[in-house]
Length: 118
View (cartoon, rainbow, N blue to C red):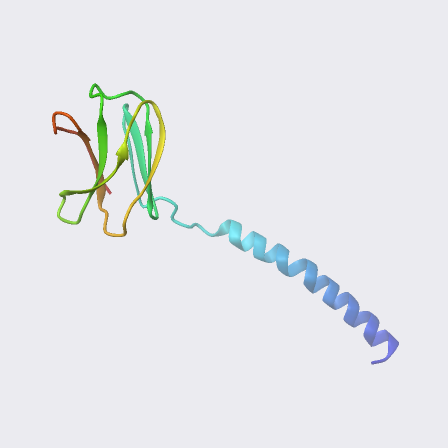
């Protein structure tokens, strides 16, 4: 390569190295990834299903002292125990792929307190 070709080659690659990452960044910003495939918002709680995690934000406590969170399977029956809601706050529970919702059950009286289907 002669000197002028080397110089133009250097500037072309410099422009490519700067422009391509900027274009990729702008393209990724415009993509709309579905972050939530289901969500419920009530006065008492907010629940959202995000990939393999259920996020529950409890705004007002239940009257029950031991609300337990269970998975709902494809037939609508409660399955695996996810955890307990101990008070106002945010909770995250990992779920399986076949989960179609979440049910909150009173652990003492075995009554359904809240049911969320996504």
